[in-house]
Amino acid sequence: MGGAVLTSSPAPHDDSADVMLAAGGDRKAFERLYRSHVNRVFTLCTRMCGSRVRGEELTQDVFVRAWEKLPQFRGDAQFSTWIHRVAVNIVLTDRKNEARNRKRMVEEEPERNDTPLQLASTTPGYGDRMDIMAALDTLPPGARQIFVLHDVQGYKHEEIAEMCGITAGGSKAQLHRARLLLREALTR
Amino acid sequence: MSEKLLTCAECDELLLDYFEGELDRARRGAVEAHASTCARCHSLIQDVNGIRSEAANLPELAPSRDLWQGIESRIQPAVVPIAARRTVHLSHRLIGIAAAALVVVSSSITYVVSKPSGPTKPRRVVEQPRDIPVPGASDEIPSGEQMPAAVSQPAADPGAETPSQETERSAPSRTPRVRQPSLGGGTSPGPRGTSLASTAAPRTAAESSLAPEIEQLQDMLQQRRKQLDPSTVKIVEDNLALIDAAVKQARAALQRDPASGFLTERLDEALQKKVELLRTAALLPSRS
Image (cartoon, rainbow over all chains, first blue to last red):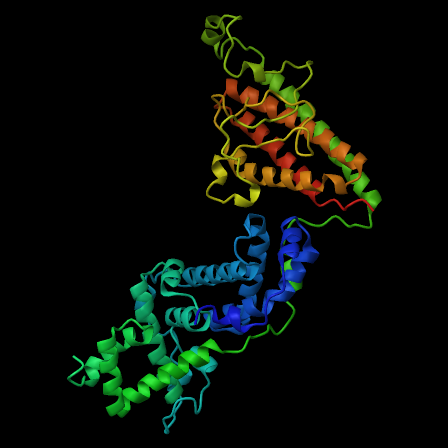
């Protein structure tokens, strides 16, 4: 499942020329990079934070940060991989800023009480009512982020642990919890 | 374990590792054997596998609006308009005037501050024989003498790595580097290995933070040298030399009076000026 988004998209064209130009201050080249990668970055941000509006704001933050950091981009990974990682870091930082009092994501509780989880449904059966994108929104933020990083984006538990500042075991437990919560949401 | 069917509770405990593919063959077989006889667990495994599969194939989303304008307004620095060549030349003149003014002010201040003032450090003056080199004395430039232009690299500069290898963590250990002759440097190179940082004066915070950017911009300018108009190159080089001289003077004065906040500010201002000039020069349009 590694690199789900990265591999499910069309083969990326060679960005290297635009990356070099943009690193030198060429905004037109950077705009071309933006056009090539905005949807993937937006998808990641939105799925991780659970809001399209916030996803758009975070996407802008990602590209601003990428512009600032581009001179340090070493080119030993693809630009798409690099900006993907920048996006993950931006979203995680945003999450940390938002929930300063929560030190461990595994201890988080659902933040909302008016989620679709409360919608009445009588007939069980996976996939019959709510689609997985809507169900994702019902997850607690920490569980959603780890589910998105692992099952959607294809990161390994060790990578997630490093990015989120938790253990690989914690990432696995959180993922399992997220899957079960999703199932519950989808079968209600 | 494979001989005995699991209970649902036992199966639940193994599911995390089951989905991760981390169960050995026997325990995996036990989970599957249990699931084949238990509708609840069979359904759970099927559902989770379905969720994983669906998650991996979720479609890409697109923002509801073009986000570029918001991004463009936030990224710096501003690009010099390509069409406005006259404006570019005007900018050069302004930069030159600003740099010259900076040098004059800096030279005056340095002279005033570095002028022997008796009461401040009398013992040092008396105890140092004139024929014994004082550390950092080679950097002192009495006003009226020709000013050396460049800040050179320290002998053991770890900056042998390329700019692209720089990281934020390594940045504070770097020193401003000027290559000779180049767009990034002055006009009269000092002795190689003679570093302002190699003397006793500590680097200022601004020096540490600006050094990586200065180096990167210098590399960038060096690469673009052939793309620029020779007269533009000359102007940039001359201005950089002036600023480098101001930096060197401030540095020399700071060596004599390391605690001077005033001198530190002058040094930081000169370095900032250098960064601004390099940024502007790095974005100059190529000659048509």
